[in-house]
Image 1 (cartoon, rainbow, N blue to C red):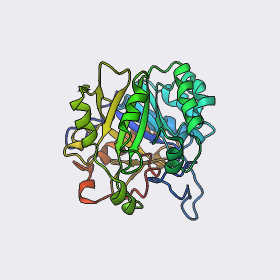
Image 2: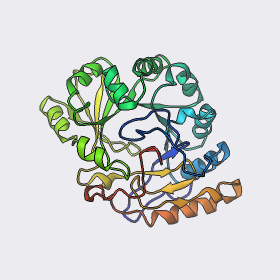
Image 3: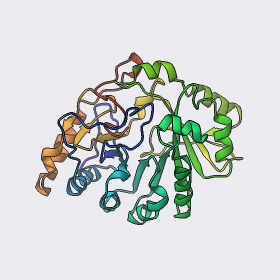
Length: 329
């Protein structure tokens, strides 16, 4: 194995978020409220199966043990199951996860598990079907819930559920969410709304800090779990009375970036050092053949020398990210 990917701040990178499409069929208020629109004049040309294999192999050779397949909505790719199998087949990759809106889970999750998918995150922004429709633009709440049931039936011991906190829409629904996970092995992850280039007005209206939820959890006996090497950025809490867990992702909290362990590759083959970075490193020209493996690793390693110590979201700097679907959230 080649030397572990590491930046100038001694952060090691065990976790790759690999986007395979920026297309999504939902119209979430905080991401794509007007639906997906391809870049003007550009026909989508997303990473092929061979390109996905090559980039995953390079990361695996340099210590990455977890790959999250993201979008857009990754299950929109017809070869999604093949992609899972390709990623899972790379030596050194221990966890293969995906983040999905869940609309295809009911029918396909068994295939995903058989292909090697070890972990699933499902976006559910409200337990009220009407509010869910209002936030996502799609009247598919019950279908998504059946998909979560199907995932448990397929053998997943725990499902992670992502909920973007929105003031006046779902941030006040903690009691309902807690009741939902009381007897279900769900890790419910509250994600603070993040400011992107196209969402300034929504951010100022709907942003709410996760600190109030954390304070309420601690006051009611919830305890913080230790964090694993390839875990994401959530602070995870557990309680002896609950089968479920609560995770909090609070990117505006001081020190959020000190434990960064993840890199991103976009659906068109750019390395992004941060979700809110101001540029990407082109990798696609090195993904055309297996003979470029060492050069690919060298370019990624060179890119890491430019990774900043932190994002600057707290200063209102959102980088080049127009919306969260553009490089996989």
